[in-house]
Length: 263
Ligand code: BTN
Image (tube, rainbow, N blue to C red; front, top):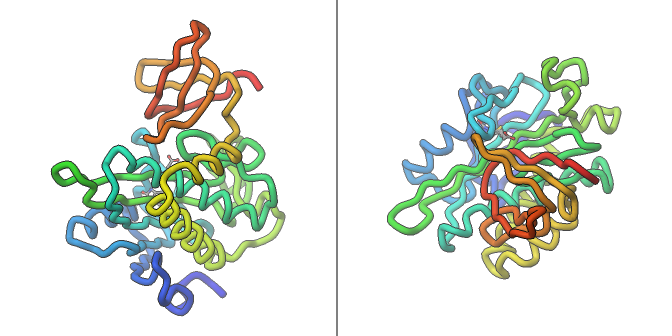
């Protein structure tokens, strides 16, 4: 079944994530629009799905390549009731949910790269951009934006990312149903979101650590002008990566671009 308003309606009815959905042939950015809907009071579990984005947003002010007809561009609105410091746990949950979804197509191959890239064979197949709105000292809502490269061929990626990005079709050598991927993604996300709300961070952290490609390796994390290097040892409850530097100092990094230096 193709990805369209009717097939989404039929398959997302009654689901905690996806029951309320907005489908766009074309949009600037699903995250921007989700933020706007969140401010207007859109209920938890509302999702936005676009066929293409003209201004898809990546982390660190980057652009997310968003051509029509091949990929998934979605944003999920959540309204967690836990403290603001735990908000990054939601993007960690999203990374695990995507990895689990992908595992069905490429068993055992999905890896997570801090903070929340999903890789297959070291190449990026999915990016996650979470944005939060706070009111006083509580989370008002979180927008979890997820872009998955599904049916793009190697040649269809722009030259500057051709060697560092991949898609499910490239990895499996067949066309993948975007509708099937979306249904499974929302189900996995709902499962892990409930898990962190009910049982705290430990279960998902364990799953994340198992899927991570960084723990135990020498990494370097760059943020603005600063670089921290050392052995990645753990993931903190606030989503930060814990690094043990050569000088035996433990440093927590909460944002940046990570590179594995030594395996
Ligand atoms: C990254 O830089 O890795 C994050 C990319 C996030 C892209 C998705 S696509 C759907 C949603 N809408 C956006 O504008 N960005 C996110």
